[in-house]
Image (cartoon, rainbow, N blue to C red; front, side, top):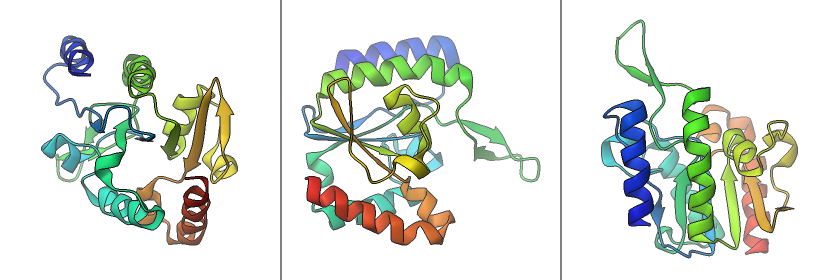
Length: 185
């Protein structure tokens, strides 16, 4: 995995400059791999996925399903923080990954999945679902909470933990999906 990360970082620097790469984190050969969209500001600072506000929700998610962070592998589709400068504050704010970032990082994501060899992939949000399945028509609102088997992979889509922060109405559905995941595990 170290060689894979080094190669990805070198290629990323050539393409995107000195922006900080946030590598996947956790146990190699973990049975469960969680995949989100992209790192945010706190993840960029700490160099680890899911350590900001969404990370707190992820910790609650892990507790509900009975998992320890040390036993899983966590990554993102895009390994750099996609941002734009706020017109009001001129500070970086998150934005969705653009085509260039996706074209660059999606092949790395699929190689990372091959290296980890999880028995179950849990996608967190729409971006992760689309790019793990390689199906741009996939929609989290339709697929969440349902086990999908594709190309020898078992995939369980969940709403992104951050979506519960911004849309409290998803909280009940999110908890129901977590309990379904716990049953699968």
